[in-house]
Image (cartoon, rainbow, N blue to C red):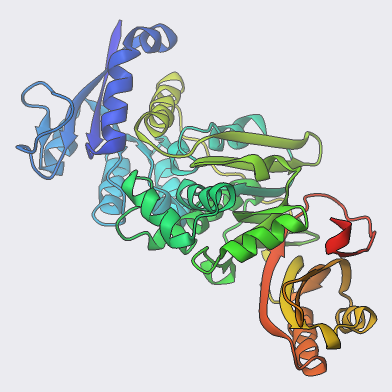
Length: 440
């Protein structure tokens, strides 16, 4: 039986997961690929640091050049994260004729096309299954099993931290601050949670998926991004009154020759699968022209789920050592459309004086353009004021802004205006529902 020697760049959570999986599943892996995988070197910052697993002497190194000069190492696995020096390491590895596996979503999002070209030029593989949704087998399914499928929409819960926070707020009535603190205490959120809660992490993953699905590069500046820091318990309770849950949704949708991408807190129907994805789990929804709707669900992070995705990429390389997979090319001229002109459904809520409440006048405000009210609910909060909840059907951002300005000009008592996007995942049948608290 042959042996393939590999090197790990990094030995934190994911690197440890890779080590443990290769150790515990040694027999199954060898039976599947007909050879042994040996971890020959592990790049670390501090050799003397105490670790949860013991490795044989001589494996740990602080010198990347030592790995690069060892010609017996055929696969280099990057699990350090970040941009520097990891981008340089990956480029040097590919240029030296080594196959590369990475879990680095930031790097693939920003430089994926460049390093894929470099891999092809050097007739080696670059795989990155673990960069999106951890252990969920998604990227290789899109590349291989769905390679000829025309995918029209991809949407998902791509960040487990924000999903955990929103689940706690929805299921237990926690405030954002309390749910975040608990996520940090459990290790689901970093001390600085900005990348997660402001939607950057989901944006990087969405760029990777949109390139895979649509075959085009998307400028980050054209992707609408909004995090969950402003989501309140009132938002969640009012969404529930209309039959929705709030999720941080990353979505890309084909519309004629355009694609629209956004990351935003979004109302999802309670009956839809994504609404039931709780805790720190991830899920992705795909809609294809031939296969219809597909759902992928599982743990999006963690030592073993992410480590499993990395190991599956290593095995995939050893099964097929020819030139690496290439991302699909778009067969039509698709461009990215700014959200200013893209249409969406919206949830609008505000409070107003009961004396000025007029259903027909309210509806006319939102139906002066192409938008229209598909659902309205009035909930009395006090003797003089009520909360008004609306679902606005298919308005673009500019249309909505004009309608909201007209609303505030028409009804001086309007206060606390709040707007969130809505995704129903199906063709809309217009069936307006005008409700009040007595109809619930």
